Length: 184
Image 1 (cartoon, helix red, strand yellow):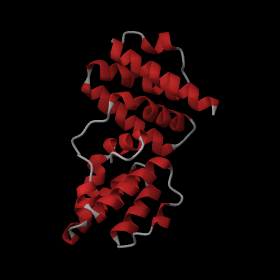
Image 2 (cartoon, helix red, strand yellow):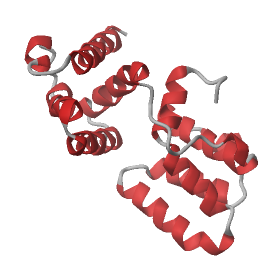
Image 3 (tube, one colour):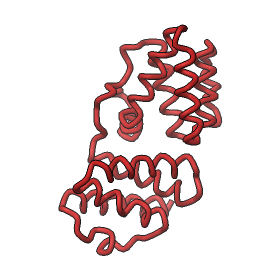
């Protein structure tokens, strides 16, 4: 994972439990029903194209051509699963936490995609915001600005009100990243 771009490392770390679970279940034929249940849950969260590719991989079709049509995040996840199926030593640590310094680009990308109507991104960022809210404290404060950011709020003073310095800085980094993304 060290040779991957930081953004891809962040995606893999964020989805490590899912990646590891898919590979573990796929390598044990008697767990096919559990794998199917996991994939159905992923589909319910909007990962239709990704689950189609995962099913191809777990059915033994391992061609990279299957990755065509996936967005960047899904492609990174699918490639990590494929690497894990070929060599379990490449699997990410499912207990690792995303690097806070790398969080802003990923969150900004999901916020931008959700704001433009991407259902998968909206589902994922909503689930993340709910986890942050449950964590409480500064994370709950950050979760509270996700919806306004999706809806286009860009007033830093308004968004950062009541935040500690670390959460404020992350919010400012997200805003800066959103600004860069919009100028492209």
